[in-house]
Image (cartoon, rainbow, N blue to C red):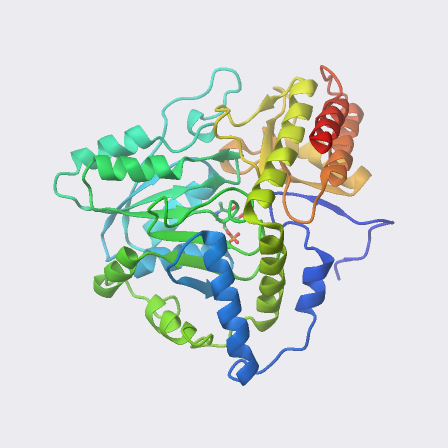
Length: 406
Ligand code: PLP
């Protein structure tokens, strides 16, 4: 049996970029008794969470909720809009974009994977894993597609494996500039409710998200926000879709119900999370994540280490990727920090495994939680004998103290 209560004292520091720490208020809401999902009370809950989600996705259109992890919502997006053999244009920004590409292959689509070529001289990492999706390359590829075979452009908004965001409005402009009818599908599984995201204004056709990041819920539910153009495409798309099909769900959602048994207790949690986010106001939520991200970057710069995101306009407000010096095994460092300080950090995934680690700054956090996490990292570097240029903890304290005085 796994010992889930092994922590000596205090709370475990869950500083991975999701699942994020869940506020007690949400855990309490989830613990309420499960009710009849066809009974009279349930419809009010269903309507409330759908309306609240529309505010968070910044859309007037349907938001479909699945009792599945984010991977399920990726699949839902593709099977609803595509037919067997359809071409889709995807952009390699990191591990999650790569997994989505692999899924498209498995579903019998013809995904084309654009990437920035080459490796970065300073770190030896793939350049495409240090930058966002390149709208110019997308536009050029769409212009070449004279037969307009490409059904959709698929981009990850907040690449959780690297800490780099992509400019979604620029990708929309690229599609429009090429005069191409492709749908725009965006994964903001780790961006929603932490980074500014505008489904309608940015002209996104399907937005995919999940519960366990900015929404501060446990893993287990995920979402598709769907534009009228995507709904129209779904009517003629012929990939097999049953459980994931939008039409039956959207029809029953009109009265707050689902065609299957929904995840009632996570919906209680979602209702509470939406209250918390909307009470605070989305601008304040985004500003708090930016403040945390700047504090963590101040620490990394003081340590004299490389931030994985090489474009300072695209820093993620949700997590920071830190490249370890050549020869320093990032996984061994993470293990030291975990075992000694009960602090979990995100691992380097896929092509950057062992070369970097990630600090999540989202969920039930505050400035002082992050100071503690940075102290754990700095002490871990010391134990591992990695020389640092200076104290990141000191630099972050200066940042947070100044930000609090604003
Ligand atoms: N896309 C992104 C950007 C993610 O961060 C994740 C998970 O962390 C996924 C997709 C896959 O979601 P899940 O693990 O919930 O299936």
